[in-house]
Image (cartoon, rainbow, N blue to C red):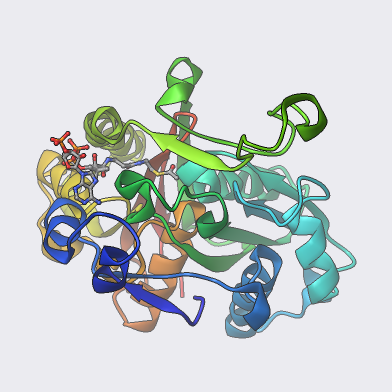
Length: 318
Ligand code: ACO
């Protein structure tokens, strides 16, 4: 996570908002905002998370044969964040690419890697979720500026003969609703020379209310699909690690699945919505807190821009 903490009190001096509103409507108390002066670019954050994951897995970067990064905020339009991180890690034996799937980016990336492992295309892979949303947020728009933040998380996936690990992945998209949440930058605006300098190239727009209702419905449906696919019931899930967009969305999902909040991991109060990064950050914290027990089933589920949404069920094997 970036070092700099921006509290709700700090947000009060940036936009017309209150700590009370943000806490009540989203569950967020503070978030982390990166600075390139502190080596906290997308590439920097992803590299640090990857090094931590490789260390925990006891694997050297040369062992990696595949690297996929879920992100909508790479440092450059091209090359991919994955290629830039590959250089930093010295992971010369991997092929590397990014996946752009909004907040579902990590789950989409995980699914690509899982299937590549299953068909024998790779043995040892790195999956990263990283975002630097502070660089695309409109800091005058209180409805999004208070929610979105920066961070990175990474996992190592290995082919193993024994059962367990990633049981199944379930990916969904609905491009007909892309305009409920989008950012404009890169090549989607008219060059300055043709229009003057008054138009800002960076902005992010979200119809939060419409997304809110769809998020709860889609997260619940894809979770049920994942459970049914594996002949599991809600009570078989030891821990749900959901995308951290809004505590009320998470509570709605838990209620629909009839899973008590004690079996749902949340850290949104500390980090806000870091899009593709929320799930690997949460998995890491849950793991280090001892909440992921060997042999237990974990449901991970996300929803975001695209629209995209996805779920996976894991059997924790460590
Ligand atoms: N402070 C104070 N008031 C605010 C703020 C703020 N920061 N933001 C909005 N308001 C006001 C609005 O202007 C509105 O005022 P009005 O009634 O006078 O018009 C009022 O609060 C209610 O606004 P709503 O949008 O209806 O509030 P809601 O309860 O829906 O909460 C929120 C808004 C938090 C955005 C919620 O809708 C949400 O979480 N939506 C889903 C977000 C999400 O999951 N996005 C997808 C993933 S993000 C990604 O992919 C990058």
